[in-house]
Length: 184
Image 1 (tube, rainbow, N blue to C red):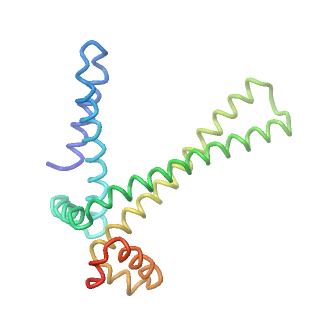
Image 2 (image 1 turned 90 degrees about the vertical axis):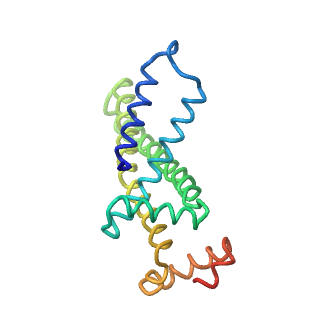
């Protein structure tokens, strides 16, 4: 079964649980379990589809390679994903706050409209700045996932194409995995 289909089925289950109301709602443990499974499937799919995009293989083959990558890296991809996701989310919030500040300054300096208009303007500027940042930072997240996949699959290609970046990645990997010195 393809990964996106599993995510869609899980989305449907989560929707049914959320719309059931408090009286028919299952235990919080089941709710938490399904939510965690949903996040893991989306995470796994991102790396599997990265393999599909980079190497042009079918989803099943890519999924097998991703599983092997996760076993070899000790699930460091998950930690990498959580840390970069948190940093990128903070960047999106900062962009929203900057958009709000700019909107406030423009409204205060030029006295463009009254109080309610200024509040609507602030709200629209926050949302717009966060949407723009989300679009940009989504590409950054994809680049991070792609770099991780390419590094895990064949670090020698990175060495020949970008030697300085390879040395930085290699130094970090040797600190984390001293046994990798022989293979790198």
